Amino acid sequence: MNPTHQAPARQPASNPFARGYDNLHIERLLLITYANDCPPCFRPVHDTQAHLPDHELQLFPCLFNDDFALIGAGQSIPDELDERCPSTGLVRKVIYAVIGETLNERHHVGDLYSLEEAQAMVHRLSFETGHYSRAWEISTAHLTEEALRYLESRAGNFDSKPIGLLFEPFALTDCNGVGCKLIGTPWTDDNLVRIEDRPYSSLRQEQLYAGTPEALVNVLYLAALADARLLIFDPDAAVLDGLAIFDE
Image (cartoon, rainbow, N blue to C red; front, top):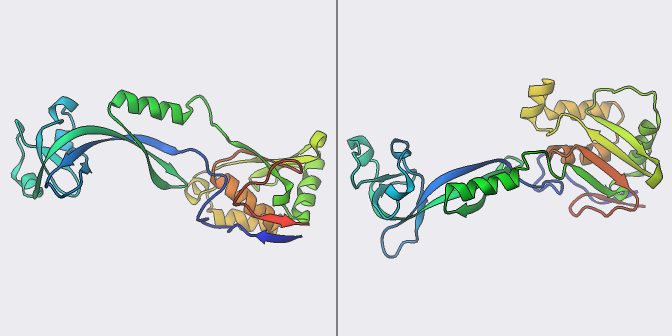
């Protein structure tokens, strides 16, 4: 079999297994207008005024810089903060921005106009009762013949014991498929050092030294990096766009 395209083993520019957001949180921002020919800008209120409710921020004049804003009307602003804010504007709206991460990259998910609405969005996206889409069924075309034989051999050996490679194959005889249970995900350096006291590079070398085919190691890494826990290879399943395919 020859690969038609090869997914990188480390730090992929994109990961076809990535779904959803991690570390969802809410940031309260002020939408500020200032000079007539300038577009609006967004700034967080300074920590010293974070206690102010929305109605004491919205439609009030403010001072701001590149990092934060301060409401001037009815508020005492220390001289050292006043000197750090060269611009003046008007707070038009209080915005609750929902921010998330995908593969450690920050993403702006959306803006809401009340804390309650933002909290409801975070709740819907977080799936707090469990983890969503941590199981994948993909075509065996994403494996070389060597990798598929390796999985089938390990899955069919019912007497085999865990060998510390952080994945365990299992057989699916009714569909001629084979699955993998991924352990200790996500396979980021931070998480693996925390639970295994080793970075991913050490795990990868151990998997390869143990005879795991490289094509399988690459697929498992991408799935585990996206925090998938179950990966099923089925000859009748669809291919996953962006993942390496091997032609017969």
